[in-house]
Length: 330
Image (tube, rainbow, N blue to C red):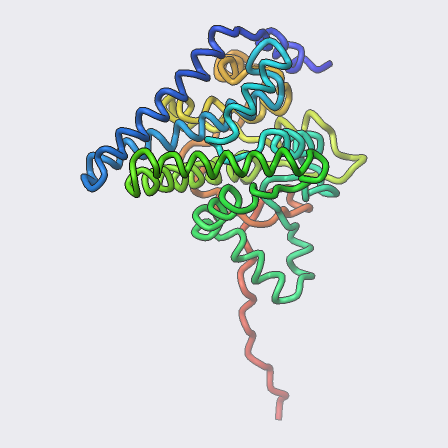
């Protein structure tokens, strides 16, 4: 066991009191902000901050559901399972499918031979250069942040998660029930508050998807990330170098459940979200992480392709300039 992994074990202890405060407290903030924004419908300047608070609370609830998928939020397995199901309607994400697909992602992080388990697909520079024009066009659109964040977020959370990847492995009946409960949640907001309630919930969900996709992209897409083919792929190098350490401030960590410290999470997913920040800060001397601030975070969206020779994520290559034809001497 590596020195970093061994040191991280001290932060795996579960505290059901902290977990319950995080779980029910985030739920309370979410619904208070959601209903408050609904009651202020039409007063846009007063309503907007509450929509943002509700959206961040929704992202935090998703992170808590993700914790439950790793059995790392509460101390008991069944406590995590039921808590995960309890969060799935608000997050629009079926719990078992999320758990199954996310565990595949953890098992294959940094693996160039199994990129379909990643949350954001990445082409290599060599694949780009060999690709036909229509595949390049698709990939350009896919990696465009002005498409990926708004359109991708809506597609994934509103449409794709109604029948997620590997749905057959986790059971279609559970996903069907989940979809009915999601419909009931939206219907309940309409019955309770009319169209303002429904529209506010949709607005909160949309902003949540924007934050979520922004965060998911940054977790593994930055200049000095790491990809390799097996058997050369080393797990610890893949998770520590291939997962980001975001330093975007305390408020960001609060609103996103500390998932910004994604490198230590991938090394040891048993660490609860309420201990990730402290663990990361305590182990920085031995981890030596490359911290990513806001400037580098936005710059990461200009990086599109994995250059296997340079071992860096790079932008699209510039179009080759046309050279003037050399006329034969008379």
